[in-house]
Length: 112
Image (cartoon, rainbow, N blue to C red; front, side, top):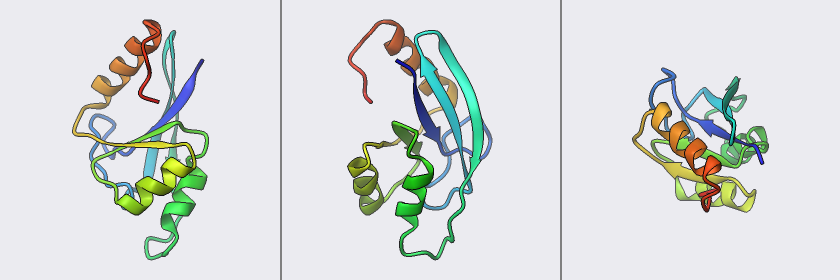
């Protein structure tokens, strides 16, 4: 079953953005057939907003996971309550996407 992920990247090659400081997320759909780029989703939230994690989660509600370099505990907990898992990683997008597609094709237990 296809699912979507959000990746915080400003160069399209590496996860290199903090959850609360990124201006956009790259959205991908993962299935056993491969990866489809969906969009570069601009984030519409005032960076000084006390409720930024709520606004971000609302804008990512169609995603099952978020990949970032850093995320605070409050934001991570809030995403988890919305059934969105967050991962702090230092990987290339290519590596993440390949692992997720491989797991999907092999019907392995998913991280999502």
